[in-house]
Every structure is written in C-alpha cells, then in structure tokens.
Amino acid sequence: LDFRATSDERRLGAYNTDYAGALDAIADGMGISREGFRDMPAAVVGAGGVARAIVAGLTDAGAKVTIYNRTIERAEQLAADFGCACAGLNALSHLDARLLVNCTSIGMYPKVDASPVPPEVLKPDMAVFDTVYNPAETLLLKQAKAAGTKTVDGVAMFVNQALAQFHLFTGQVADAGLMRRVVLDSLR
Image 1: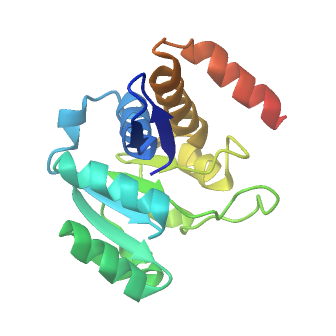
Image 2: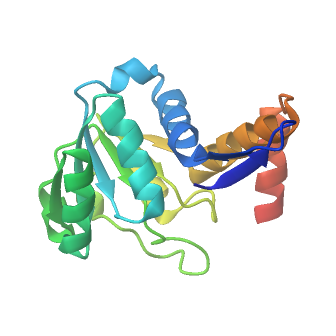
C-alpha cells in the first residue's frame, strides 16, 4: 500500500502504484509490452517493500525471477511468497538474466559512488532498471550504459506512480512529460 483515496461514497480505497509504475517503466524502457516479460530471466536486488511490489509484478507477468539480497533470510521469505528463486549478493558474480532491477538504496544521494552489482556482470543483451531516482543517473546506470545495456531510471517509475495517484485522486490524466521535467528539475 502506497496510496489511499476516498470515493464519493465515502469509502476508502487502497492502492499500490509501485507494481504498475515499475512494470510500465521497465516495459517502456525495453520497448516491450507486459507480455514480453513471460519466461524472461529477471534478477531483483533487494527484498524490501519496493522489491516485493516489483517481484509481484514480474512473477504475475510470467518472468523467471531470482531475488538477490544481503540478508538471505529476507530473500528466502520473499521468494517463498512468490514462488521464485533467491541467492545471496555474492551470487551476482554469476548473474544470467535479461533484466536486472535494483530495489536497494545503494547509489542514492548522497552516497552516489556506490553500485549494488559488480560492473562486469552487465551485458549488452540485458536491461537494467534502478529504482533509485536521486540521482536520476546512478553509478549502476552509468556502468550499464557503458556495457551497452538498455537502462531505465527510477524517475520513470516515480512519474508513473505519480500519474496513477493523480488519476486516482482527481479522475484526470496528467501530462507525463511535464511531470518528468518537474521531477528532474527538482533533483538538480
């Protein structure tokens, strides 16, 4: 749950905009539809709240998810909840995935010189999505671009969430381009 809204009937609705916000950002960045996730090997780094939403979305879309986390017990619990694989962070050195998703705060301002994965595992045939949005281009995304991968920044998810929340709250559709510019301007 990351958003609540009331309707005219004075009923409370609860929504998680992480799920759709992330999946739409990744699909757009990869140039695929949500159906394109089917059977895709995906690595999710982290096992917190945003990881839970993204793992739910990816497994619902049919991706073959492996969760990597520093605390293996948290990864095991999340993996059990969604019927997927898990491993410790040290296993990232043997990464074999078409999609890598960072759901940790590693690389977030002010500690911008850190990356959650070793750069040598990044390959041109994969896509990398970093949920960190400040800075918009994290060290992980810079390393991924240097490796020739497709990249998706956390701002894309942040904007998708805001668009969904705005629509739920007002019933109107916001301008995605304007919203992205406002977010990026506020990060400078």
